Length: 214
Image (cartoon, rainbow, N blue to C red; front, side, top):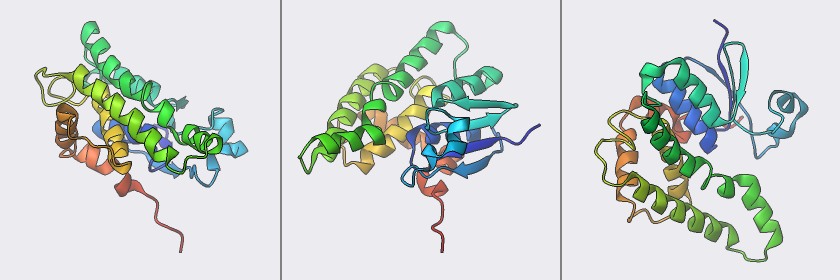
C-alpha cells in the first residue's frame, strides 16, 4: 500500500476534520505542513496538487483527494462499517445536513481569506472579531436546533459521524474567537463527548501544531 500523505495546516478546520477521520479509521499517515500564513499554499508545487490552493489534500490509494467532506465521504464509503455515514439513506441525509450546516454555511464566510478581505474593505478596527462572532454564533444556534433533543451521545446516534467531524473544529473556532456558547447545550455536550475519544484528542490543533524552527 502506498504511503498516505496529508497536506495539512494545524489550525485549519477542514484539515482538522480529516485528521479525526483518519484517526477514527486507524489509517496511518504522514503529515506535510502547509503554512497558510507563510503562503505555502500559493507555491507552484502545491498548486500542482491542489489547484484551489486550499488544505487539506490527501494522497491515498494512488489518488489525490481534495475538499474535506469529499475526502471523508470517500473514506466512509470504503469503510461503511465505520459509521461515519449511516447505512440508511434517510439517516445519511440527516448527517449530511448537519455537516453541511457547518462546512457550507458557517465555515466559508469565516474562512481566513474572506475575513482578510473584510479587513481591507472596512475601517472598523473590530470588524474581524465582530464578523466571526456574528456568523459563528448564528450558525451554531441553527445547528443546535437541528440536532435538537434526539437520542444519542453524538450529533446523530451513538457513534461519531461526519456531522461530529464538522462540529468539533467549529466549536474550537468559536472558543478561539470568544463566542458565547452558553445557549448551545447540545453542541457543547457533543463536543465534550468527542473530546474524550483518542481519535479526536490526537487531531486537536494543539497536538499537531508544528514546533517552531530553532
